[in-house]
Length: 199
Image 1 (cartoon, one colour):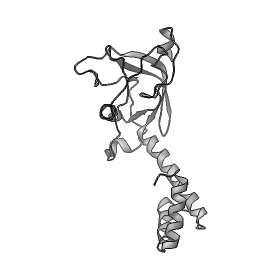
Image 2: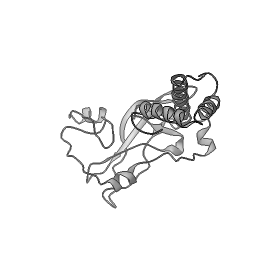
Image 3: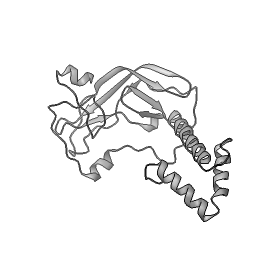
């Protein structure tokens, strides 16, 4: 919002970058093809190196977060702007601490207007909304806790003991699913709990 406010324009939610910091009511809609969108997305790899996965109290996170991109992916060969300050008050959330007063920047293509946000998993960080940056080990911890809670709930709904580790819970469910009737019952619960998406 700071960028929009400094330019004297009101902001709205952009569906492409999912951030209110960049778009303004006067921005023209950008129509992107699916292949361009998939090229633009920086995905955290499935097989992260151990040094990225493991939480460490000694990790020294960068305090200035600026996207690595230098040229626009929509307009071939067009260099991006100099970094544009979003905030100097962002926070990095880790498993052990909150690091305050982190500066986040974006870059913009002068031709099409597309903004590029900081999203560099190699720094062991996930940019949630330019103001809250999550350490990847914290993201993995949160995901694991959510998965265990879902499995516990599923065990309870199936009348199984819901105490113990994730492995204990999965073993109980696996043993219970050996009959087709129970398999169908558990699958129905998983399907319903996921809103119709398989887990």
